Amino acid sequence: MAPQLLKLPTGVRWVNAQIHSPFRSYAVASSGKLQPPKKKRRLDEICLERFQQYSRTFIQSWILQGKVSVDGKVVNKAGTPVSEKAVVQIMAEIPKYVCRAGYKLEAAIEQLGINVAGKVALDSGLSTGGFTDCLLQYGASFVYGVDVGYGQVADKIRRDERVCVIERTNLRYLSELPQKVDLVTLDLSFISILLVMPAVINVMKEEANLVTLVKPQFEARRSQVGSGGIVRDPMVHQEVLEKIIKGVENFGFCSNGWIESPLKGAEGNTEFLVYFSRTAERNAN
Image 1: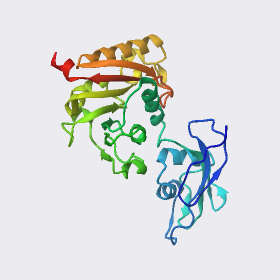
Image 2 (image 1 turned 180 degrees about the vertical axis):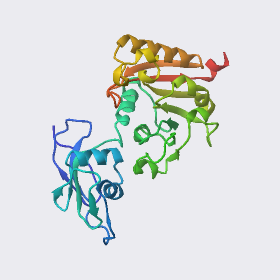
Image 3 (image 1 turned 135 degrees about the vertical axis):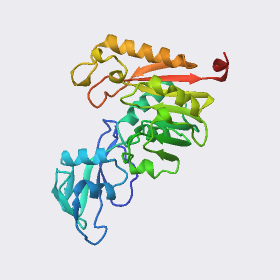
Image 4 (image 1 turned 120 degrees about the horizontal axis):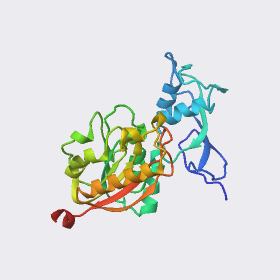
């Protein structure tokens, strides 16, 4: 298959590569000498400032992998002091989404036939913004991104006019949004999905959809979670899925199907994505 080339801003030179991964292509990105030197700063901080299209996670990973050079020399420590006048180059795979979570949601959209185009969405568990990035690339008109944390959102997402970032906010206690949404996506940790369902319903239109990432380690009983926080038993996976599907249906939703996530969680846990619909007729009964 012929290599796929994408258009990048000035200062980026493409290197041909066969398409063999979800990252599509390889590139060398050079920041050049942007401003007079003031002082030395951490390499990862300089990269984040100059290459704002990439998340902190990607930047730090590339540095560790030896894919970042300073004045022509490879530097593999994120905390290395670097002059602000230095020429910094990144030789790395160009990701489709700001983080790997985007590929999880993409799989659900494609395999479960979820229509995102033109929808107003709430993405809770925003984190870096992988789900939100995916929603926007699939045509969502606006996304409210909610997260209990602060400062994790990729600049690409934070600067997008179609995104409203709401940080330091627990979805469980979210009372309202400026408008009701057509779609809710959940990527939550350390809390059961069922505990946030009243808040989800409160911000939804009467007819809306829900896509949730199910993480067994946060839904199973403590005795079912193994060493390292890993749930390895397929029977527990099935039990958790049934509990979540029945539990969400009790809130007036209809299950439209589920898939196993194409990517495991950060610690190696198997995860699942479940697609639900809410209709005015169902909630009237």
